[in-house]
Length: 107
Ligand SMILES: [Zn+2]
Image (tube, rainbow, N blue to C red; front, side):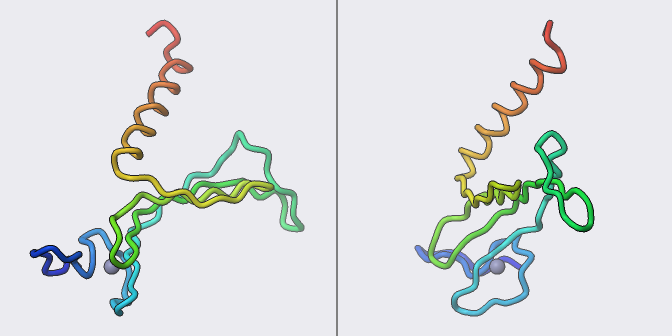
C-alpha cells in the first residue's frame, strides 16, 4: 500500500511492498523472484542435492532509498547484494547481452 508521500519525507510504504507490518521501523520488501542455479554445483544433503539459488526482491529500509536486493545461496557461497535501480537495469542488460552471445553466436 502506498503512503501519502509528498513533501521532502519518505513515504511510509512503497506501492510494491508485500509486507504486512507497517511499524515505525518497517522495511518494505517486494515479492520474491527465485531462480534455481542448475549450472552451479549443488550441495549434497540427506534429502539429495540442493541446488543453489538467487532470490531477488525490492527492499527499502526506513529513511533510505529503494534498492533491488539479490540474495545468493549457492554453497559455499552466501551473499546479500543491493543494487540501485540503475545498476539493476545495467546488470540485466549485461546478462541479456552475454546470453545472446551464447544463444545466437552469429547475431
Ligand atoms: Zn512497506
